Image (cartoon, rainbow, N blue to C red; front, side):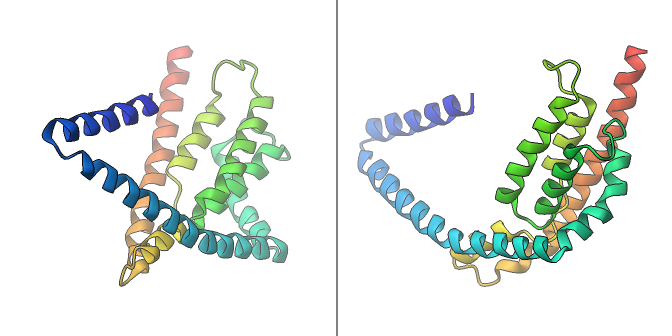
Length: 196
Protein backbone atom coordinates (compact mmCIF):
# COMPACT_ATOMS: atom_id res chain seq x y z
CA UNK A 1 0.00 0.00 0.00
CA UNK A 2 2.79 2.43 0.88
CA UNK A 3 4.45 1.74 -2.48
CA UNK A 4 1.19 2.59 -4.27
CA UNK A 5 0.91 5.87 -2.32
CA UNK A 6 4.50 6.81 -3.23
CA UNK A 7 3.88 5.90 -6.87
CA UNK A 8 0.71 8.01 -7.00
CA UNK A 9 2.50 10.98 -5.43
CA UNK A 10 5.38 10.65 -7.87
CA UNK A 11 3.08 10.38 -10.89
CA UNK A 12 0.95 13.32 -9.67
CA UNK A 13 4.08 15.47 -9.36
CA UNK A 14 5.27 14.55 -12.85
CA UNK A 15 1.82 15.19 -14.36
CA UNK A 16 1.45 18.57 -12.63
CA UNK A 17 4.98 19.56 -13.71
CA UNK A 18 4.17 18.54 -17.29
CA UNK A 19 0.86 20.43 -17.35
CA UNK A 20 2.39 23.60 -15.89
CA UNK A 21 5.39 23.44 -18.22
CA UNK A 22 7.99 22.85 -15.50
CA UNK A 23 9.06 19.29 -16.33
CA UNK A 24 12.73 20.32 -16.05
CA UNK A 25 12.16 20.86 -12.30
CA UNK A 26 11.36 17.14 -11.95
CA UNK A 27 14.60 16.18 -13.69
CA UNK A 28 16.68 18.61 -11.62
CA UNK A 29 15.05 17.52 -8.36
CA UNK A 30 15.55 13.83 -9.22
CA UNK A 31 19.25 14.28 -9.97
CA UNK A 32 19.80 16.45 -6.89
CA UNK A 33 17.95 13.98 -4.63
CA UNK A 34 19.94 11.04 -6.02
CA UNK A 35 23.22 12.87 -5.41
CA UNK A 36 22.17 13.84 -1.87
CA UNK A 37 21.10 10.25 -1.12
CA UNK A 38 24.46 8.84 -2.20
CA UNK A 39 26.41 11.47 -0.24
CA UNK A 40 24.31 10.92 2.86
CA UNK A 41 24.58 7.13 2.59
CA UNK A 42 28.38 7.31 2.32
CA UNK A 43 28.63 9.62 5.33
CA UNK A 44 26.33 7.37 7.37
CA UNK A 45 28.41 4.27 6.57
CA UNK A 46 31.26 5.62 8.69
CA UNK A 47 28.97 6.58 11.54
CA UNK A 48 27.13 3.24 11.54
CA UNK A 49 30.41 1.35 11.33
CA UNK A 50 31.68 3.27 14.36
CA UNK A 51 28.54 2.66 16.46
CA UNK A 52 28.21 -0.97 15.44
CA UNK A 53 31.91 -1.42 16.27
CA UNK A 54 31.35 0.18 19.68
CA UNK A 55 28.35 -2.10 20.22
CA UNK A 56 30.51 -5.11 19.33
CA UNK A 57 33.23 -3.94 21.74
CA UNK A 58 30.57 -3.41 24.43
CA UNK A 59 29.26 -6.91 23.73
CA UNK A 60 32.75 -8.44 23.98
CA UNK A 61 33.45 -6.46 27.18
CA UNK A 62 30.26 -7.74 28.75
CA UNK A 63 28.42 -4.40 28.82
CA UNK A 64 25.59 -5.72 26.67
CA UNK A 65 25.30 -8.73 28.99
CA UNK A 66 25.16 -6.32 31.95
CA UNK A 67 22.44 -4.31 30.20
CA UNK A 68 20.64 -7.56 29.46
CA UNK A 69 20.77 -8.49 33.18
CA UNK A 70 19.43 -5.07 34.11
CA UNK A 71 16.60 -5.44 31.58
CA UNK A 72 15.78 -9.07 32.47
CA UNK A 73 13.36 -8.26 35.35
CA UNK A 74 11.66 -5.73 33.09
CA UNK A 75 11.32 -8.24 30.25
CA UNK A 76 10.12 -11.00 32.58
CA UNK A 77 7.40 -8.65 33.87
CA UNK A 78 6.33 -7.62 30.37
CA UNK A 79 6.54 -11.13 28.90
CA UNK A 80 5.27 -13.48 31.65
CA UNK A 81 4.24 -16.15 29.14
CA UNK A 82 7.79 -16.58 27.80
CA UNK A 83 9.94 -19.09 29.72
CA UNK A 84 12.93 -17.37 31.38
CA UNK A 85 15.51 -19.43 29.48
CA UNK A 86 13.83 -19.16 26.06
CA UNK A 87 16.00 -17.67 23.25
CA UNK A 88 13.28 -15.10 22.52
CA UNK A 89 14.17 -13.24 25.74
CA UNK A 90 17.79 -12.85 24.60
CA UNK A 91 16.75 -11.54 21.19
CA UNK A 92 14.24 -9.14 22.75
CA UNK A 93 16.88 -7.81 25.14
CA UNK A 94 19.42 -7.36 22.33
CA UNK A 95 16.79 -5.54 20.24
CA UNK A 96 15.87 -3.23 23.11
CA UNK A 97 19.55 -2.61 23.91
CA UNK A 98 20.30 -1.61 20.31
CA UNK A 99 17.22 0.64 20.25
CA UNK A 100 18.20 2.26 23.54
CA UNK A 101 21.60 3.04 22.03
CA UNK A 102 19.89 4.51 18.95
CA UNK A 103 21.09 1.80 16.59
CA UNK A 104 17.87 1.05 14.74
CA UNK A 105 19.73 -0.67 11.91
CA UNK A 106 21.43 -3.01 14.37
CA UNK A 107 18.16 -3.59 16.23
CA UNK A 108 16.30 -4.86 13.15
CA UNK A 109 17.99 -8.30 12.88
CA UNK A 110 17.47 -8.86 16.61
CA UNK A 111 13.82 -7.87 16.24
CA UNK A 112 13.28 -10.30 13.38
CA UNK A 113 15.00 -13.07 15.36
CA UNK A 114 12.85 -12.28 18.41
CA UNK A 115 9.66 -12.56 16.35
CA UNK A 116 10.84 -15.89 14.89
CA UNK A 117 11.55 -17.18 18.40
CA UNK A 118 8.19 -15.92 19.66
CA UNK A 119 6.48 -17.70 16.79
CA UNK A 120 7.88 -21.02 18.07
CA UNK A 121 5.77 -20.49 21.21
CA UNK A 122 2.65 -19.59 19.24
CA UNK A 123 -0.13 -22.20 19.30
CA UNK A 124 -2.11 -20.22 16.68
CA UNK A 125 0.46 -19.33 13.98
CA UNK A 126 -2.04 -17.22 12.03
CA UNK A 127 -2.53 -14.83 15.02
CA UNK A 128 -0.07 -12.67 16.91
CA UNK A 129 0.42 -13.65 20.53
CA UNK A 130 0.19 -11.10 23.37
CA UNK A 131 4.00 -11.32 23.68
CA UNK A 132 4.39 -10.46 20.00
CA UNK A 133 2.10 -7.44 20.42
CA UNK A 134 4.01 -6.31 23.51
CA UNK A 135 7.32 -6.66 21.71
CA UNK A 136 6.04 -4.75 18.68
CA UNK A 137 4.88 -1.91 20.94
CA UNK A 138 8.21 -1.81 22.78
CA UNK A 139 10.21 -1.99 19.57
CA UNK A 140 8.22 0.86 18.05
CA UNK A 141 8.23 3.11 21.11
CA UNK A 142 11.55 2.18 22.72
CA UNK A 143 13.48 4.65 24.85
CA UNK A 144 16.50 6.01 22.96
CA UNK A 145 19.39 7.43 24.99
CA UNK A 146 21.76 8.11 22.10
CA UNK A 147 20.03 8.80 18.75
CA UNK A 148 23.17 7.87 16.81
CA UNK A 149 21.58 7.62 13.37
CA UNK A 150 19.79 10.97 13.64
CA UNK A 151 22.93 12.63 14.98
CA UNK A 152 24.76 11.25 11.95
CA UNK A 153 22.14 12.55 9.54
CA UNK A 154 22.23 15.97 11.19
CA UNK A 155 26.04 16.01 11.06
CA UNK A 156 25.99 15.00 7.38
CA UNK A 157 23.52 17.82 6.71
CA UNK A 158 26.05 20.30 8.22
CA UNK A 159 24.08 21.00 11.39
CA UNK A 160 25.85 23.43 13.72
CA UNK A 161 24.88 21.30 16.74
CA UNK A 162 23.87 17.77 15.68
CA UNK A 163 23.64 16.51 19.29
CA UNK A 164 21.11 19.12 20.44
CA UNK A 165 18.35 16.55 19.86
CA UNK A 166 19.58 14.16 22.58
CA UNK A 167 17.47 15.68 25.38
CA UNK A 168 14.24 15.97 23.38
CA UNK A 169 14.78 12.46 22.01
CA UNK A 170 15.12 10.96 25.49
CA UNK A 171 12.00 12.82 26.61
CA UNK A 172 9.90 11.88 23.56
CA UNK A 173 10.99 8.24 23.43
CA UNK A 174 10.58 7.91 27.21
CA UNK A 175 6.97 9.03 26.91
CA UNK A 176 6.40 6.77 23.90
CA UNK A 177 7.74 3.75 25.78
CA UNK A 178 5.60 4.48 28.83
CA UNK A 179 2.59 4.87 26.54
CA UNK A 180 3.36 1.57 24.80
CA UNK A 181 3.65 -0.30 28.13
CA UNK A 182 0.48 1.26 29.58
CA UNK A 183 -1.48 0.61 26.38
CA UNK A 184 -0.23 -2.98 26.29
CA UNK A 185 -1.29 -3.62 29.90
CA UNK A 186 -4.70 -2.01 29.31
CA UNK A 187 -5.36 -3.84 26.04
CA UNK A 188 -4.31 -7.18 27.52
CA UNK A 189 -6.84 -6.77 30.35
CA UNK A 190 -9.51 -5.51 27.95
CA UNK A 191 -9.16 -8.38 25.48
CA UNK A 192 -8.69 -11.02 28.19
CA UNK A 193 -11.88 -9.70 29.84
CA UNK A 194 -13.82 -9.98 26.59
CA UNK A 195 -12.63 -13.55 26.02
CA UNK A 196 -13.41 -14.67 29.57
